[in-house]
Length: 261
Image (tube, rainbow, N blue to C red):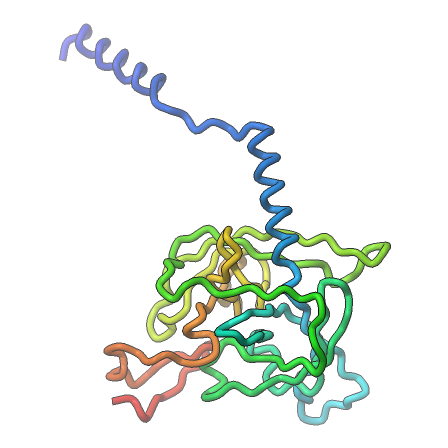
């Protein structure tokens, strides 16, 4: 190639770079609209979120007097005309005392309802309130065939302590639903979200629950497992997977499925 031809190619490349559309930084108006949308989203859906205070089962030899209450997130979902309070099974299974703390600071006693089936395989379980949950605004699941993979999702949470005047400020948390988890946990999705957020409902921008986080992936800082509706309270039937004898259950322990064929 001659020097003139090389110069023409270089000029053409520079012109393409100069004319290629660059992603513009958001304007103050766009940032304000985004902030307003997030604030409205938080205000609309924070009343479906609860803090679950509970006593786990006593360890062997543990003195009940020195037991410290624990807490985890929960969500109030309306499903087929029923109002359900859901929380991660790994946290509240066998809880001897449960209280639900609502956004306004009120507390309602509840009972942990054992899941139907093998609890080690079921990520969420129901909590049955002993009194009406006044002021709660339940959320609903996305449609059964709604896509979840690679969706931008939002979670909402509030602080564990009330601010002066008895108020709380809800916060929107960004998350991304990733690909389905590898077999045999393929009924769940990876969720890109920071910290330990077990029990957080991840919602579409329309306010429908796509999945609920139930545990962080061990050894990671920004990855959790998230269950959609069809796998939240039961193990859905597998397709073509029953030939596998060895499987990994929900909580990471290997078990032998003697009934698999």
